[in-house]
Image 1 (cartoon, rainbow, N blue to C red):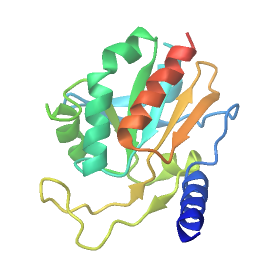
Image 2: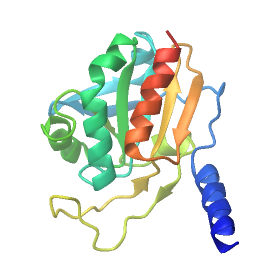
Image 3: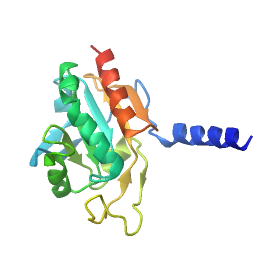
Image 4: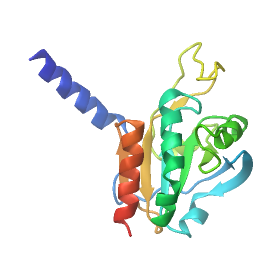
Amino acid sequence: MKKILLGFFSTAFALSAFAALEVGDMAPDFDARASLAGEEFDYSLSGALDDGPVVVYFYPSAYTRGCNIQAYQFAENMEAFNAAGATVIGVSLDSIERLNDFSADPEYCAGKLAVASDIDGSISESFDISVRQSREGMTDTRGIAVDHNLAERTTFIVTPDGRVAETIGGISPIENVEQSLEAVQRLQ
């Protein structure tokens, strides 16, 4: 009985833990400083939607275990996302300097995946993403201090008309990428 109750509460927590934006909601437009292959640029969601659907994925922090896995999986599958007509932008509360390194790192974003800085958390807030403080003394996989808040791992598939087609959260980084790819392929 304990296992059943624990499973129920774990499932209930996972379901309630991720974003409040639902299918059909308008995705908040945003502009942010972003990086691709270590090069900074100005990113605009509305501008990206002019070219097709956008996968907007929020993640806790560059150079942390799950985020490294997810960035690598997105980078490895970027051709499939592009073939489905979609672009991908990662969003975290990391500084743009940290994201410049992450976006160029051949082990993770590999110069294929753009990542945007939400340093003040306003983008996360507009998407109703839960943000929590990092643990005191937390370091990344390189041993560098993580001195910013952490966004909840949640992905939104946004259609060219700006509506949320799917919200994906509460699953592993690999499943998140797989479900994101399946979602954009269904939009074709």
